[in-house]
Length: 374
Image 1 (tube, rainbow, N blue to C red):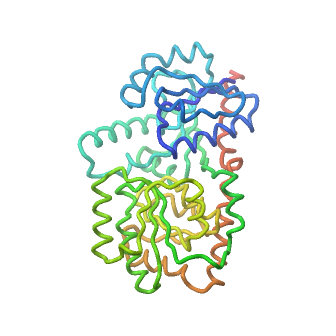
Image 2 (image 1 turned 45 degrees about the vertical axis):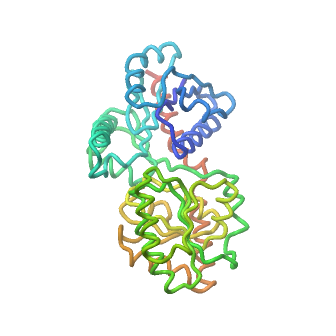
């Protein structure tokens, strides 16, 4: 069986992490499956390291989504014939255009299903994505969702599946998991609240800042560290203005991107991780923090409560006081915090790649077996 992994749409760090993890497990758990990853000129370098035996095919197209779709529409069928492709795996939540083969679709983008008040161009793109998502829900041979939350979102918007459907969570790196073990239940944690994310507007960073100001009144010396890029400069200015207005500038560090080693130090030294996002299909940083024994505070209405499990607390979206109260919970006694630290680490243990990818690997092998028998 020859599986073509359509990675043309994968242009961000999170997407690369997820696809690379699943491809590694497919290569390991299903050695009889031949795998080719379809890349573009814009992301070829990002996938420089693929598992042994996994082939790469670089298409003469850049990262622009309209041009990418047009190229697939014109050349997809020919490519499948030339490479003798049996199955296609698309990680974009939609069917790969122009590829007349049974398709396995990995759905992990909730934004088009929950976005409101977008600018005209973004709203048009979201509308087209919703239509493509609906078609995938109806026609994909297998739908794989990175959380039950995503599975429910598709069912709510597009109706239940009539064919195979699985939940395949994403994993965290084994090296990070091992590195976190010595820091579990470390009683010398600083009074730091850590947030790691792409700081987009829907991440509700302003809610976290307001909650932190309430926390600081009760926990002298508390600090907030915000790690990650800001795709919207105006939103960063709004958050920084709120930080100044609330009088917590000396206690909030807007760190931006940090090196991996520094990020691990922050995971290991923070008292609690918090991301009150309004839109999450998973939440990798929360699990990474839990691998270091750092419990999490997240918001309901997303996949985050499902993912952080017993290793954290979920509160209502946009509820500043509830968020502050949840944060304060992790600044109690050392005995209580150590218990929560162990719970966080135990929850992170659910997200080893081998177990996370297993439902996807099984579904692909079953589909391949059906093709061979037909």
